[in-house]
Length: 128
Image (cartoon, rainbow, N blue to C red; front, side, top):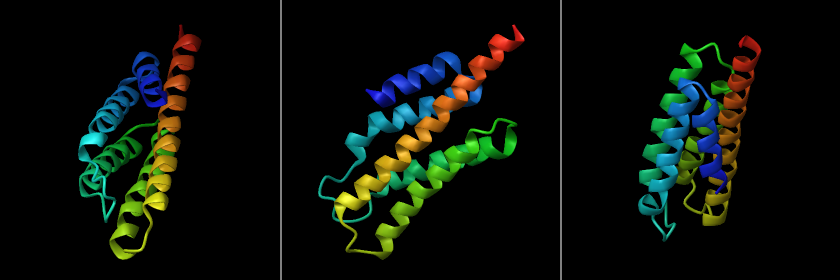
């Protein structure tokens, strides 16, 4: 619910970058139930790939736009990717820790997108 409403808000109020990020985010959230290995026996490879793709997108935005929100979004996404990397090296990483870290980085990254969309909307009002 939070992800859906946040992505809709970013698509409604945001610019091109916010919309692209929100659509990728929403598609990843919709695909997650089908991509996750429910046994949590190791690295979640499919989600690792999705997270790497999203990190690449955030890095492109961070380096090519004057907007500030892609920087924290990329940082949080890097932490999500590093959580997957940690699961490669620590086979005792508990599912609870893996899931919790993923959720924390996901929602913080989403917050960056929403704030970016909000700021974009405020800029439009000031310029109008």
